[in-house]
Image (cartoon, rainbow, N blue to C red; front, side, top):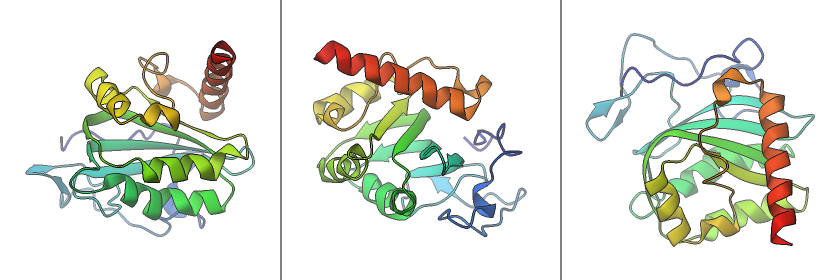
Length: 193
């Protein structure tokens, strides 16, 4: 896992540690010393610790004018034992919600497992963004991760699974990703109606 880096392709446009509104503003990274671990596996030092011992994140891009954030995760999303959604919500998302970010894309290509528990933080997150036309979308979740999320009825708060899987998002610009997901979510809602 130590060689899996967060996506770096948009760093010429956005760097979280230089964004004064980011929860990771001013953070510095040591490229040579690997100190963060998920269980017994060292991870690349560019991943950001947010309080969870099993799930790390990287804020890849934020557009305050268009009210969206793109965040990548790595590890095991474990709400049952380590309450990872609480750390994600309180340490990362709440700061952006205060800045009127209402559309969140969470890239889950490196989320290996999900262990659910209570849905309260997901409901709170959804309630925080829905009135502003916002949404939350998890991109590229593994099938077993989506199945476990469905068991806990998280589809009432988050978009995930097909058609949000198998997205080659690294070759896209952030605005195109948002437009594409917005198009899919709007058409999905029309099908429900």
